[in-house]
Image (cartoon, rainbow, N blue to C red; front, side, top):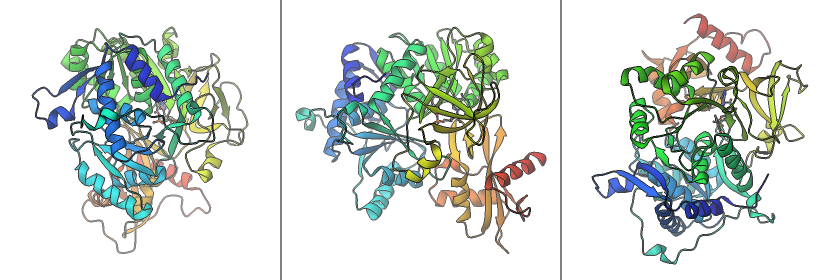
Length: 540
Ligand code: J2J
């Protein structure tokens, strides 16, 4: 399955083979910085290549050496692609951060990966990114004595410096002979325990998944792809996504924001054929389309994944949004399942598809790792040609997250149909899925527990139509503690002070004298969370 090719080589071949094709249509922060009136960049693959070599020279100039880790934190702008290629061509190992990440996450990623640079754009809205970079860099310096160089992607390139530049290959693990089997980049896990873990993906495994995905999604040179999800997400990057589009030489259109208004305009203007959505966004589009009456005739494929899509919503996709529905059930750790173009409507509406590779191994087991009876629900374990065998530098977590024979414990509860199609029926991991963004409940609880007025705290995901799940936090106060009129504002302010990433802030906070179940003797934290969720649902 593995071809001896690295991602930088793949990018070079694609840019050369598709030189004349339009690669990207997106807002450019560099154009903004230069005060141009038209802020949208339209780059062919040849132009993308040229700019990416300049970016690579800048990355190298900032001190990045082959094998060094680089935090990539850009929104969906033209410079995202330019720097993605640039980091690879400088020999760097990108760490795929989100624009939403704040200091607490970024410091964790920088330290875990021992990063030497941070690429951001000071024109990104939502925070002062120069300032954010400085606080991350100083924390890294204090804790690791390591300089974290800052690279502001909104600044124009220094063309002179790059003339002598020659692209390099990344090297992280020199005891392997094949470069293609070394780590190419670090993805972020949704996280079930504390802060996100880093996911080491290799060139060969990832490129296999991209080629296979492009084939299943039937991408070709004409398949203009609209990216509304954050580009760094594994779904957007590889299913078949950005790299699938690059592989086939088609055009990537970046939406500056995920609103239906922006997306519908881009679909009409750029004749978009493929789009990827998470279920809450799909619902927002469904709600908005009848009012806006967009022309969606060009849309051929609407991929939905990241969280469970209800059949009642799935049914409306094609009638309202025109394109054919494809369900995608994937994970940054590897395994990706797709419904196929020729599947029956029944399968496309009710299952999350089947593995992309005939070499993906699937096991559905009970709590003791014993396979369940055919058609029963159980824990999904998987192993295969593009699924990791361990998180990066996490020996203790790896013991729990993988079986002895190397199967990854996905934390998803599924049922296998006789056809081999997978239906996701539940979740066994303590995680909240908000807008497709995964948040470990104990990360939220851990922050809340450091609050001087909090004695105990439990976070749960409250089912919600708009975002999938909302973060509900129950706190038990210390004796005589007072959270004032609005406990939710008090807690949110505290989370902001701690520089927590905003999508992880509690949205509803309830103060309780005691947690349900805690007086019943020895029970697990998971039971307490379940009891809290019951209590919340009953009182709604
Ligand atoms: C139910 N749960 C789903 C689905 C993901 C393609 C698509 C998605 C991701 C992704 C991805 C689901 N129905 N259709 O990486 O390449 C939940 C499961 C899963 C977790 C992984 C890709 N699709 N999920 O969402 O790493 O719980 O990847 O284990 O962000 O999302 O999350 P993540």
